[in-house]
Amino acid sequence: MPADGAEPVVIPADLWQRPDMHTALTNRDIGHLFRLVRQYAGISQTRIGVAVGFSQGKVSEYMTDKAQVTALDVFERIAEGLGMPDPARVTLGLAPRILTGVTLPPTPIPPRDGTPASSLLSVEQVVIGSRQPDDTCDVDMLTLAWIVGRLDAHVDRRTMLLLAAGLTAKAATSITDPWERLTRALAGPQALDEETVERLEARTIGFHRLEYELPASALYQGLTSHLNELSSLLHGAPERFRRRLAATAGEAATLASWLAWDLKRPAQSASFDRVSVLAAEESGHPIIQACTHAYRSYAREGRAAIEAVRQAQQFLPAQGDDATRAWLLCLEAEHLATMGDRQAAERLRQAEEAFDHARPHRERAWTRFLDAGRMAAFQLSVHVRLGDERQVIAAGQQALSSVDDDGDHKRIAVIYADVAQAQFQIGDIPTGVTYARRALDTAQRTESTWGLQHLSTVEKALASQQDPAARELLSDLVSTRRALGSSPA
Image (cartoon, rainbow, N blue to C red):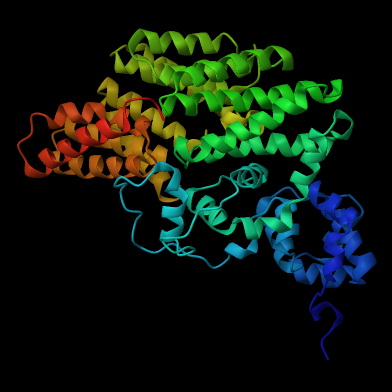
């Protein structure tokens, strides 16, 4: 007969559906969750502890609110130990277990060959084995963005694809409550509540995070639907929610403008720019305009790009928002370096100093991308453009090391492009061609003309080469640029 602590934990299915359990999961209140498990499932502190890997004393601390869980891996351990069903996991901010055990095959995603951009998720879901080639993609992008926005950890490409593969219309039926609540809120301002606003904020964050992984064409329609819902709620919203709704609408509008520009829709991009300006004023968050101007800098060159970054910096507060500050300084350094201006090194130093004080995952929707790996990519880009060979070697090694554990393909395309350029500068043509080919492949997969921009200098270096591999790569670069255009991504 097993001891009390060794008995398996079995929690009634209806307990996960209780309103008070939903509240505990939404608030990530593990103490409340444990109290409900003990009260309604009759499970002792010892058995809870054995199931989730805690001592009885630690469980007691959580149940008496003397300690709180904040780490994502601990939430995951608790969910696994208690056998939490997928709807409860999603409410807690974890990926559904429907994705557990799905692995990527060793074959990389093939380059794009004329397949419509709107079918990207279908193509990649075939790769990870969840769909047949003739299936229709029915991923709920709005719900996917909400889930990704609630996850605390960095969402790499593999995780995002697994989420997308599992989040079909059928799988999403069990987590419709958030959108039922939103529907009621859209019916009248009296139904708007704190939880609905938080869900909308999470969804805006999610769209910004998905932008690192997906091309503009895969996100644009879902993001505009999100903005339409925010617009409807803003009309007549209670004052206590209005500024928050305006802020999240502004953060979403900056991204929509960026995506519209990438899709060659300049009129729509300009319209979203105007929305972001109005939202910045209404919300009292002028820094939203900093993001808008920063995105514009990617679409410009030379002094015009530097001017856009400096306009963005005018909207920074005197203190705080260090992640945005670091990002803008990196952009300025990169543009200065492209022009051969040695001030770039000083701007980069200032950016590194700001990053030391930054909390990217706690500041703004658009700052989630900034981490040590992205900073290394900026450092590499600046040093390559300044021709600083010694610094290039160190920055290149650090940037490449971040690729191993990172699924951000847009970043990878840029890193490989800059490494390729560095190799050409020191005369190692074969290695340069190898990295340039990797950069092109990853840029093609995400339709990233941002990556292609970094390959423009590689094109110039290849133009004088007679090696067959170099000539073939140059031809592919030119044809891809013509196919995807030259707007930012």
